[in-house]
Length: 205
Length: 101
Figure (spheres, each protein chain N blue to C red):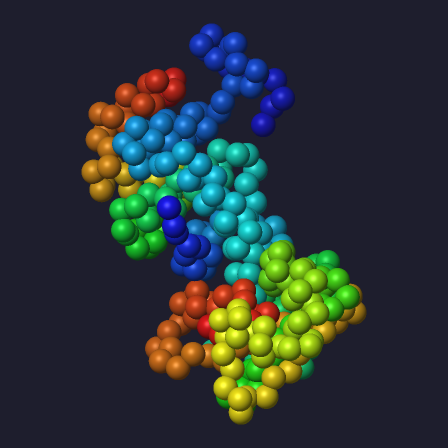
């Protein structure tokens, strides 16, 4: 788009930066929705913020869904996380050495970074605030079962729990178990079931 | 007011997938983020399934494949609002006119 203003419409001439047609169109819709009481003040802002914060993990969800539906991919993923994740087009800084650890009926994995907040962000987006908190980092090592229970995941006593400490060298990523009753679902539907917390290991899908 | 992130939105793929960088949504201008948020708010307020919007988005992209993604998004939102009787064509015209369209 040109730096120069070729807008010959005098109506817009007094605005510091004339709005583009689509921008005016969006604004017209927003005005209408507000008039009709469909958009409370601040609502759109809060939706946008939440998505900017929470939508990152969808890359990881696609990796998990592929592993659930393609046994050969699952094998490659567990053998070399970074390379298998790159097959789906995800990679980049802070994703160089991703190790994928798989949950089984008798084993649950959970990830922490005791030192700081190392996190596989090409697949999980930016880490949530609690992941970086000193309480999570300390307690996930000292009393992981208690902490998981507080976070809403009550692990049966006979399920072994492994806590993985991520570092700048190795970033862990949990492959959750495919939930029962999802046999008929395709990859896209499955991906929608996978939450960020399930890939950190503080929840199950 | 409570609502939660709808996984169906994050799972959109193909032409309907919103632009991202390293998995994060990318809005090139604030209005794009507002258009995004409006569609989510409306779908939720009307109690619709996300696919109601997604299908219109795919249709809008197909109708104007060269248009920037969020222009198609706005077109899809307009058609959703009209089809569900949230606004009339008359009201839309008046609102656009107020904004010099």
